Amino acid sequence: MKKVLLSFSLVVCSVLGMQISANAQELKTDAPVAIENPNAPVMEFETEVIDYGTIEQGADGVREFKFTNTGKEPLIISNARGSCGCTVPTWPKEPIKPGESSVIKVKYDTKRLGAINKSVTITSNASEATKVIRIKGNIIAPKTTPVKETSVGAPVEN
Image 1: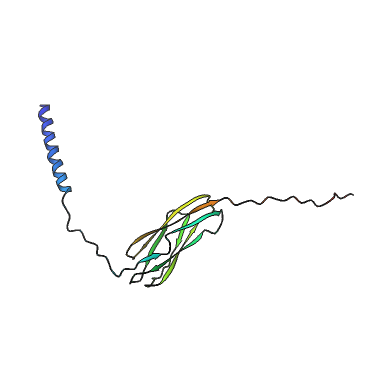
Image 2: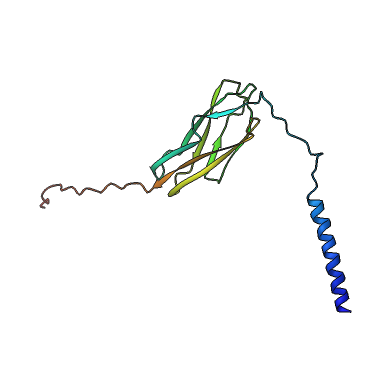
């Protein structure tokens, strides 16, 4: 009896397996096809990576990414998000007309020591709807200046 049940189970599993794999092979033709807009705005950056180099802790952490809309329609940036709370972007809220340039400011919290490798994800109506720009560098502790001892002269006698 066990052999019969085992054989029956194997037959059922193999039939179901064929049915599942057959369903996985079907093509869905009713999915909407995205049509590219040939007039869409295009966000063209002067640079997509800004290197802070090696800077001291507490230094100015603001940098600007300059870009131009090289498309044929106005560019609207709907969001810009830093990869962590220490990277805060500020972007233009007004549409950028074709041919116009603008900047996205990125402020990094330079109180943190160590290597910087952060990203900012920009969401817009451009032909490339999501764009990632990056900052990198290294923050070191500030140099301390040695305190000079000064001699004032001979001791004062009473």
